[in-house]
Picture 1 (cartoon, rainbow, N blue to C red):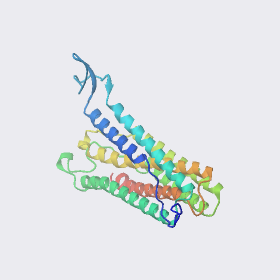
Picture 2 (cartoon, rainbow, N blue to C red):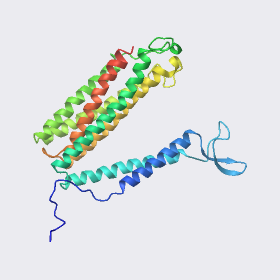
Picture 3 (cartoon, rainbow, N blue to C red):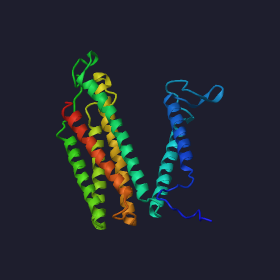
Picture 4 (cartoon, rainbow, N blue to C red):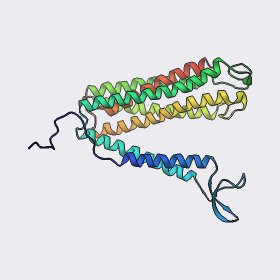
Length: 291
């Protein structure tokens, strides 16, 4: 009789996991809490006692707001991400990520980055549509009257240099890992993480000193909303990428990566280069040509 415990294939048959259910439930709670909160629902003190309803007056504050359901769901989503990826790391460390599995993981990361490309294409499309064909509602000019744009060769140029430098440091770390130089790997990752954090700080400073707000009346919010959504989502991706690389740095200190098996780091490097390229498009088309 054949031993069913012996694996005679290169594939990884994953164990039953609770994370898909926990993640789906958490996302549902987060979505419902966010929608109810945006519509003003909560538990308010009324003449009939505590009631679940919208705000009875404009200045009324709920005794218990539905925004807490959003935060509860968000905590569940973050917990799911941590637990699920911890399981993936454990599987990699115990040898479940064979060559065939690694190919599947790489295809998955490529498709994820492709979906992110289309996400940013949507924001660029919205920006170009407004910029190339300005309507009469904004005076048929771009940028709209009343919008004081950023000097692209000040803070935006500094952030461009920061991200380009970080692209070289993460590439240095990758080559060091392949060559088995763990000291250089750690140095390269440290520099990349610090540069990513520096970029976020510079962008936060830029937003704080912007001459127009997200809800700017000038131009019917078209320029301000397109600008903040495109650059803001990129800033969020920089933050995610910085966390991704920081986790890789921790794993490098734990000795998880080897020259032949380091997909976690490789995926982080791919993601970081994608973030670099998107910023170059933002800098050229929104900051420089968008003036």
